[in-house]
Length: 175
Image (cartoon, rainbow, N blue to C red; front, side):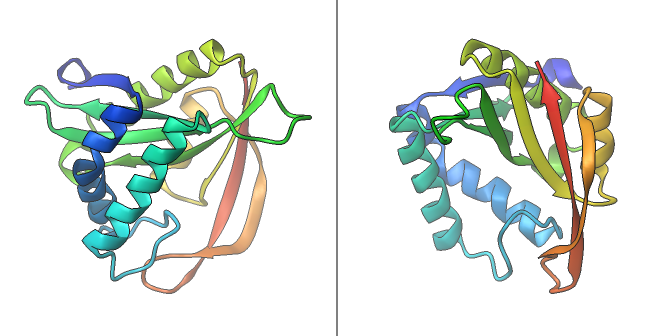
């Protein structure tokens, strides 16, 4: 249940401290078939290197990292707000890497992360958010329920972990 999950913003120290747990979530998602920029084999080294880079981006103020933890303090989900954009887009941010561990899915974790992301984006002075997701996936319904507007689909935009092409649907949200 969502009341069993706490969502918080991770500062640079917290992001660094969570690298191993974040790597576990990423590996679980890729091994589960998610198209989230990585192809198998999703090694621990590759996942850890990615999250170290994210932690460095948090330290530089280029991104915001939100993490969701269960009642036992285990990291079960994450999402990022990318804020380092061109100077003519100070009002905008990109949403990236919405990931929920398979053991925590269908419990409202993603909804909680997206609601917290809206709050953080407002705090950061962002009024336009943009994201993309696999066409036909569960995330499309999540974003639509959360008030996101579909822009369109680009066929064959990316690859699924099995090597098959997938379309990508782009969304925006005005805050």
